Image (cartoon, rainbow, N blue to C red):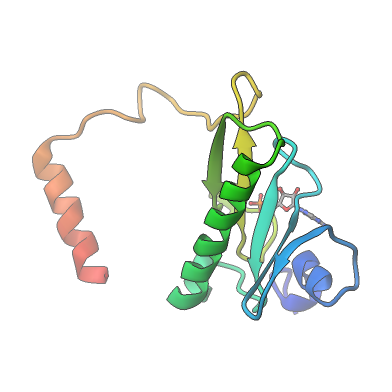
Length: 146
Ligand code: AMP
């Protein structure tokens, strides 16, 4: 049993009703509940019912459904009186990307000016304009794996 197994998984415990959660939505494929440490009030997590530690472990149908429900929840937040001037949909896959819980999940959270949240970047390294030739080569690599 490793630390990415279902037995160790806090989200599987929520699915089994072993620990409490504030449920927003559920169906046969996914559940959505309030994040216990929200970026901002209204932060929701959408998780598949199947224990899938990584994006690669999720089938396209389930991932697509998670995205659909994330969209519905984002729209609900916007309609509600929960503060939101904008919205982030976010998925962290693996440690370097910020993943901490090994059960794939989509974050939906409202944003507003000066809310203190942001993804760090180094202007020397990130968002430089590579030559078109390199962008074309990368597009060709990805096409092979779709
Ligand atoms: P990530 O860093 O993308 O893996 O995000 C994991 C998220 O799960 C964090 O935002 C945590 O606050 C959240 N989280 C962890 N445990 C719980 C829990 N028991 N109930 C609700 N959210 C949780």
